[in-house]
Image 1 (cartoon, rainbow, N blue to C red):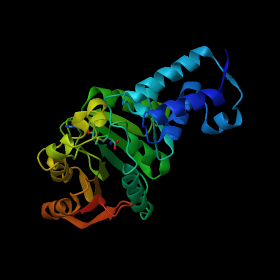
Image 2: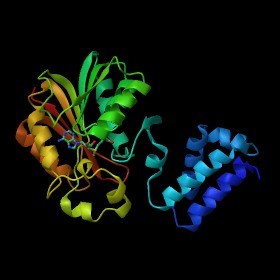
Image 3: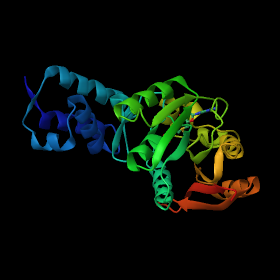
Length: 287
Ligand SMILES: C[S@@+](CC[C@H](N)C(=O)[O-])C[C@H]1O[C@@H](n2cnc3c(N)ncnc32)[C@H](O)[C@@H]1O
């Protein structure tokens, strides 16, 4: 029996809906797009096209994995960030929508500068989504160093550098924070580090705990271990007038602002997300 795109999509939507998946429509469509390697528009314009049995079986497997709680990004090995596609695998943090705010704020700061040839670092890079998006969004970046300390993020990030054709600008460095980073001076250090406290980690959705990399999330009793280390050590790597941008947790904005001021950063400010929560803290190194 042959199956059309329309019937297969409805099958997936119904299974996800019946099992209580909230975004059943979006998720089934996303998974079918990935199985068939087509766009959403293609699916809607070609509803009657026949899908091979092999692809239908693949889609069924994807739906079953989703019903087992696996995020769609790990199933399809694809994550969307800033309207771009990034390769991802289980064990690497799925880029979050709130991290787009961090990228927007860095882009806005860069746009105020007349200077180009900027040297930047994305500390705790994961997929590379922050640093690579910045390279794609502004010509002013000359060099981007992407730092992580784990094998799977390294593999993912290297693949994304290559698939986004950024090998001339972006380099991956395997390092425990700054330990193996050459001591050159940067214009921008940007980081979305692990910032979840031990207590908040225990309250996370159980599927996050099952599938996502714990070392990408957890950061001591207050969630500030990495933020403290990065802001303290970044001073040795920032040019005079260079900027540090950090993504922070829902209750950390004021603490991190105070921390940066106590270290010696100037013009320290925070930016809110759409829910009015401080999400990004920025400081200028001296000058
Ligand atoms: C919250 S995730 C952020 C990933 C990515 N930047 C993003 O926004 O999606 C934190 C990242 O820090 C990395 N990490 C954890 N400990 C590290 C360390 N000691 N040195 C460098 N990277 C580390 C993890 O592997 C993970 O990729």
